[in-house]
Structure formats: structure tokens, C-alpha cells
Image (cartoon, rainbow, N blue to C red; front, side):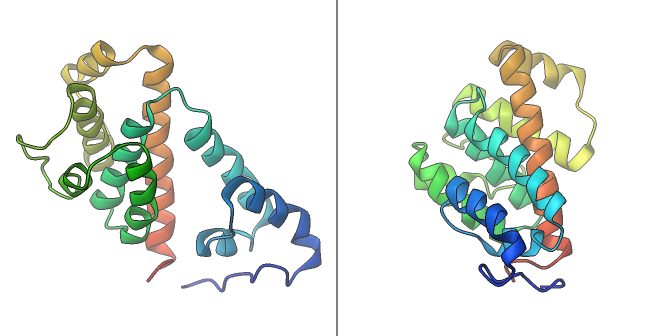
Length: 172
């Protein structure tokens, strides 16, 4: 890691914040130990990512597949491995999880139409940033307005996560 983690329980002034993270996440991961070097960033991060993960209108399988996809595209194995259990809990098979590693997504990948569209959106947003109109029309056909926003926000948020993980070499 490029920034030393803050070991839980070593800074009394962080105790309330650590308790909130523990309550929300069940543990203080290496990522959050690094984020605690900047309490305001850690706090905002926790609020945003908790909304994306726990209060989104997206089906859990779609959410987790796009998170896995972003991790693959950004070469963030720590993020990928951290979300495999969540993808399994959301009903993703091992074949579906492994299909997220293939770039481009294989035509034979065991994905539903809405999953395929969501993964294609993750690919466009992560690799090209701009989303072609034709692709976004497919997004609109599969997802209502709130789900569209939640999907785009999830992809954007996990691009932020993976880029921080990679830049700071968290999980290496």
C-alpha cells in the first residue's frame, strides 16, 4: 500500500466513525483503513457507497455484475474478489461470474438481456467514457428512470473505487 492504513482502534478520535463503518460493513477492510487517513473522505465515501450498494433500485445481480465488470476493466482484482461473494449471494452462478472476466463479453455468456445491456454500459462508461445513443436506448428499454440513474451511478462509483484501489495499491 502506498498510504499506511489506520489500524482499527488505534486512534480514539476515529472511534465513532469506525463504529459506523463496522455497523454498515461488518468489518473495517483494508480500503477503509486507508480511507480513514482522511476522515471527511472516509465519511463521504461510506455514505455514497452504502447508498449505491444498499439502497439502489437495481436488482442485486445486475449491480454486482457491473461491479465485477468494472473491476476487470480497471485491473482491480481486490475489488473483483471482494464482490464475488456478493454476486453469489445475488444468485450469480460461477459461470456468470467468470463470464465477467472476458473482454469483450462473449456472445455465449450466460446473461439475461438486461444483464448484457448493463455490462455493455459498464464497458462503455469505463473504457470510452461516452455512451453511444444506440446503447443508451437499450438501457432505457430495460430500465426505468430510477434504475437508469442507479445503474450509471453504480458504474461511476465503482470506477472511483477501483481507481483508488489501483492507484494506492490496496490489496496487493
